[in-house]
Length: 352
Image (cartoon, rainbow, N blue to C red; front, side, top):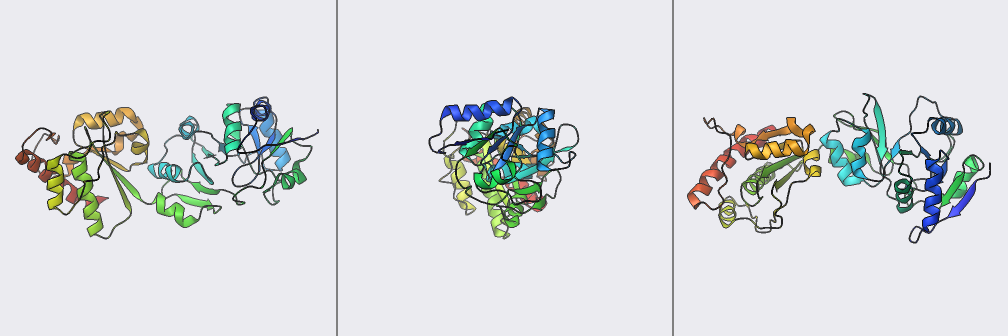
């Protein structure tokens, strides 16, 4: 077999070159493509014969699976299940990039996934529109290639096409993390140091939810952040958001005043609507009312067991666990709402 080499300018790629590589992948062929880490052999994982051929070329045990390379973060849920909040935090911080996550798959096994931070690799994967695996373009045991010339030393004549975009930018393989369980385990240190992985993975995320994100959830966020700061803790990320479509609003004057008395400045706050990404990465989600909790569970059903009503944590003998909305009410009503939230935060800070 003759291996065709195509040189592509990453800043100005020709559509026909991307399409040629994608067509070969879709039809079961093998293509050497660049990533930011090393050059890899791309293959259609849905084609059994292609994967068998790839294993033979790599001289790799057939029972050792290859990791998927995705083009979009949302595609991860096509292949993985029961994804932990810590894994979503790593995705938010390091994808696209040199991080491979090992996750539970749909069949109670495991699957490796990553999104490469390389324009040409992503373009080819998107155009191919098939599940792509892409192990390093070398025989097992040999050094992973940083140039197309290094890749072709092992693979010339064994693949249909080789895409050349010059030397890879990082020159190190991806860091591999088993995120199928907690605590997460770094299996291979690559381009991302272990300390960075652990810092992000072990940092809890708390999400407060109300209606418009201009009073109750802002109070809760401000009070918890102050409590954590006073305790010398920097291992918790605190977010507040609303379920309404309105975004970009400031806080109410009463909210600003009540928090100011506690030494908390929220004058720079702008409201935001809750997103699926916020929910998925949060370890605990605290809603002001049942309607908020139901909306969160509707948006991301798998987060249901992490959603609570904030008032559950207050030492108040009250069967109604909803914290009423003070919008449009007098300062006394705001103060009552604030007192309930503050008491709840005292307990929350002790359990997270």
